[in-house]
Image 1: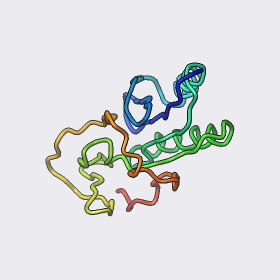
Image 2: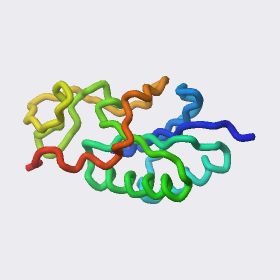
Image 3: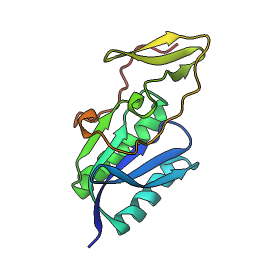
Image 4: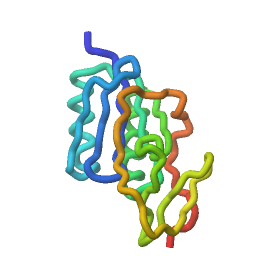
Length: 153
């Protein structure tokens, strides 16, 4: 019988990262430099052959509008087709609450629970990381993308 796992997707920038979690602990990481639109179906198919997936989790923004849209459409479709619940949290969960590049010198920042854009001259280099232990309480079934975050421009 295959292991029952949760899959966590961080597809906001390259490389995309997928974590396989058993009982909330990471047991495997899949990293790809390929375009998410091309590689997500391949990776997902391979993982379904190896594991019994009980939950899909993803970073729903802020970040690249197209990356968020592709991840959401793919994961929502798989959630419906395979009857697997979909959960989301903002990207700050995966980068220790560091600013996230928007455009030019504008960055997304999270202050308290509010996400907005700020102009920053110097920004610490922050990358997205899959946590070793998944904090389920950080995720919500309100999994729609965070498209409506302040005007960028």
